[in-house]
Image (cartoon, rainbow, N blue to C red; front, side):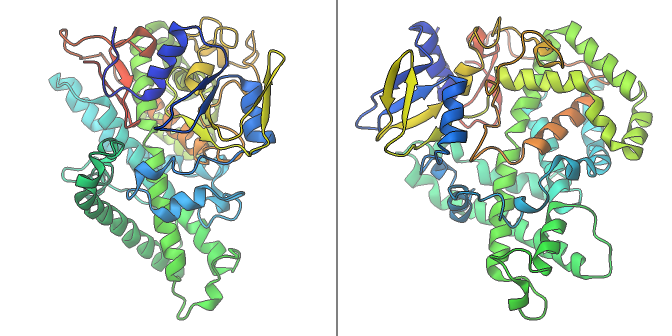
Length: 461
């Protein structure tokens, strides 16, 4: 069966790998369109590239995201040790920090639950990926700004601005279309960035007033900035206690990048719900865990979250479901550019990576039967504590590892577990693809697959 034309290229490449039974290391000559590529799905070699050699990201890999992601953000990602000294992420991007935000996040998701209730009563068909995107946006806004963005409201300013900023990403990957869309796309991105700037300035005014600020990433960054603990941005050099323009630009670019990255979690959430629908026995185990750790009553669950948000960390099987979903449906491809003297070895052979681009192929690695027995099976138990066989070291890497890993992985896991807690017991989801729709390849989840934009699953055909 031919693949849908908008399928994410990594899944097409995995189909080629399976058809020709290619080894964990293989080379592709894409000249003249692209430099020579070495595709790696071996965890030990991936570890060498990322943790030992610390190969940087491939230049230009984020270029198709401009101007939704600013040039400043893209350049920042290429720096070594960029997280440690970053104005936003180097301060408090930790699991413990996000746990404190869980009570407010759960309240912010109230409109989502109400909307799902309405859909269940009317039988209206809706796109889960869109619903998931609004939920992830809302929770990310809470983490950054410490306030509810209102993404579920009719004519939401935030959801409209975000949609405008990402609306042309897929088309922008086509070099023949890109010149014709840039003018309109740039204007929409300016609206998105202006909204972020406005919120940053409002948060800073609150920080410097007598009002006690709520916990947020910006609050932590402002505290470090005002204490001259960000060496690249010294508040003592600014007049009247205002933020320097350079610091504001850094925050705007960082917040925009954080929103763009976070919403990829909407695809993971959509797949979680799809897989639970397809595997009712596993869904019942998730529901039982939620009842045991929290309560069968949603209001009591919300109260328990408010009193003890750390309780969310006790959802061990729910986390295993999330991890297994991310194994089956990785949301990206990692490109690295190793130094000219980098070599790798496999089966007694030594290969030079001079002038090559390295593709760390998570999609293939996560579906290798020698690493994950029955690799196409949805089996969350493989991620349960004490499971046998144990998941090999460095084999599960949806957030990547080492230099250039996903700094938002802790936030993403909190978000996914929280949404599942609030909806899995309350609602039964059913797939609503039209019967005449052609099915995608089974290894891609049947009627759903990751699209070229990488933001979520779509119906095949």
